[in-house]
Image 1 (spheres, rainbow, N blue to C red):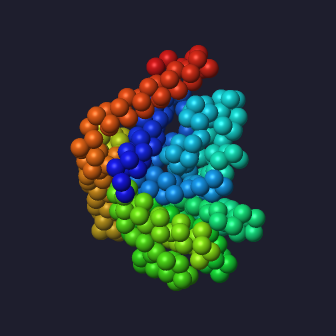
Image 2: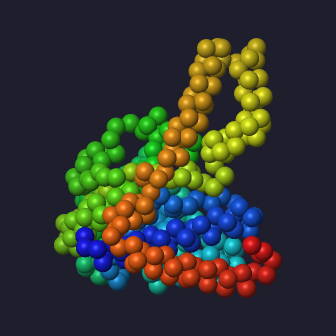
Image 3: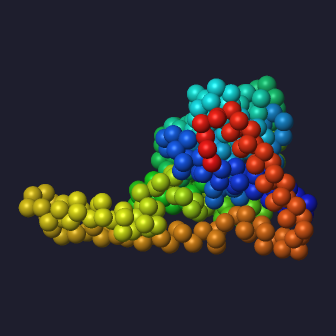
Length: 345
């Protein structure tokens, strides 16, 4: 990948990161209601894949659709208004952040785990029949690999040689459960069982993702069928903003004060499971908290920092990009605030 392409990709990732930082600020202040699942940490995977999209290609997204929506070119202002439930939002304020839809950009997301598989297969079937050469992409987490509809979609795509990329973003956590404790075998082997080529890589390395995506898109556009990409990533906010395990790590005295009593009571209760089993459960909970703390070492797997390191000889250009992105997103949030007079930052 040449330097110009890397700079373009860095700008795309930075736009998404700064946008989501504004989202976090609004969510923390209570202006965005309900759960909020950010894409922070997944930018390398998304940017590496989406930089091979052409006009007419389609995206089927999971509940972390913010980053791909921004990089695909959906207006940040309309997206932010949608998150706020505003009538001028992308979907008139009815979809929130999990149910994004753009007919113009051929982007659709859903909060149903695994549903991006059937949606992408449908997009790909339509492309094969009506617009040969176009491709669809399905983004999903590793937990979706245990959903039957995703497996059925992969089988369907393989049998019909559909032009689709199945992209698994694996952060090794299923909400607050370690994925390894609930998922058997290698995920790439599941794809290979359907005779789908599978690539495994570190999603924090956007250049590697870009190179693999180039191979996958070439295969799909030439009528050779689907590809499976298994990319690992680290999300600093875990499953969602306000993640319970992260709260314990960040504010142990405050959070443990609320849960310590009930946990000890359950461990010492006269009824229920054997004491050894209950102590074992407490040990597992302690282990999970410890592993969450290890996950705080985000800098090692931050895709933006990796690109900046790769471009350390382009300091002036990086600073210019940073200023441009900051100005764009500051302007966006100010326009949003004018439409939401009750919001005070």
